[in-house]
Amino acid sequence: MELIRTNYSSGAPLEEKIGYSRMIKVGPFVYIGGTTAVQPDGTVYGEGSAYKQTKYILEKLVKLLEKADCKKEEVIRVKGYATDMKYAPEVGKAYSEIFHDIKPLCTIVGTPMLNRHTQLIEIEMDAIVGSNLRSSGD
Image 1 (tube, helix red, strand yellow):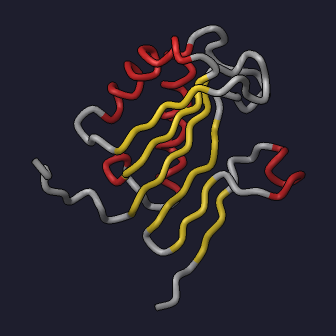
Image 2: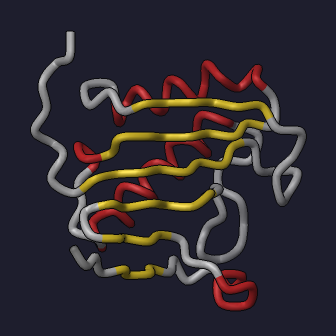
């Protein structure tokens, strides 16, 4: 079986400079690389608030999924990297507002720092197009 690979850019200048894609779709599989709360103008959204940054990032990623004909209901894994685990409740609250009923896998890991000191959380996401039909597994 031959699978088609499609690379997607978010328009961030470093993507072209360094040579990476924000999202890659291979067949029905969609992978989004680490994304922070950097806005189009280069500033960090929600400085000082892990909740605001998480919500902003997740909403940004859900919109990006649409470019690959993928829905948030097809997300299977979310990985978060927080600069301090004290932010876990804020991250969890924002995550729950978007994914509570979908219940993808979720991991939050502490990391000493991100690219900028004002970035509190970075998120990766994986999805499979067509996987929104599921059983409860319980």
